[in-house]
View (spheres, one colour):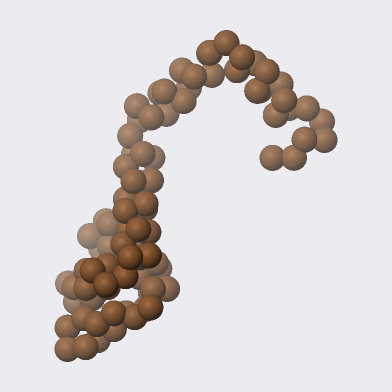
Length: 92
């Protein structure tokens, strides 16, 4: 899907996806940001990719999430999960 931007300049979904990390880190030009903003308004799929990518970046950057994952490894039954993952012939 292509959506219009300033003076009808369009940007395709694959271009948006390629630049989405740069967009979130504010490392795109003002013109590209405007084109992407316009694209997000008209493309539900790319808007969903933006939200999902932003959420992943927040989770990865949040050390407390990893603290919870590590703490969960001490729960009863976690030994069974670890043993199952180490079983020969089991592909991950």
